[in-house]
Length: 144
Image 1 (cartoon, rainbow, N blue to C red):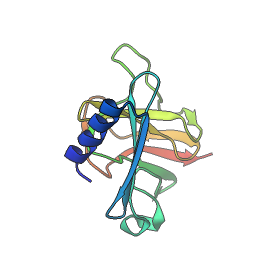
Image 2: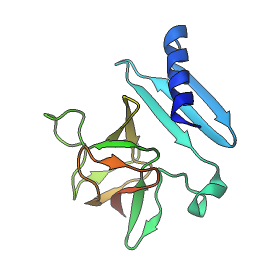
Image 3: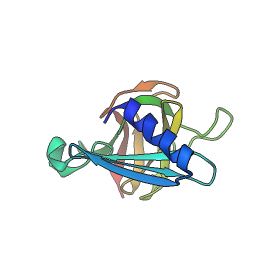
Image 4: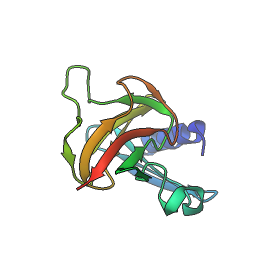
């Protein structure tokens, strides 16, 4: 699914007052949810065969003594909700499943990237406001 198609889905949501839409196309599933603040959260899942060990692209993969958290999309990495705000996480922080780790901006949409597992942040492998690629490792997390 390309960015143009995602933008069309967002426009469709706005035009029809929808708060959530889910589409499956060519084995890939995308779910867009509009939060109360107006921010649209994008959740992308890929078919299990396309990723190692059956995990989806934004999920963990063994990396030495830690797990990798990879970018589920192309965009710009932000470690905080605004330039003045404290970072979502730092090295040494303990996170649990569902905690927001960062934001990736894609097509002027701010997408929260949430932890899919708990653990301790051992490394942050990208700088704030840096471009990220699909599947690029963002964090290393030691299992709790």
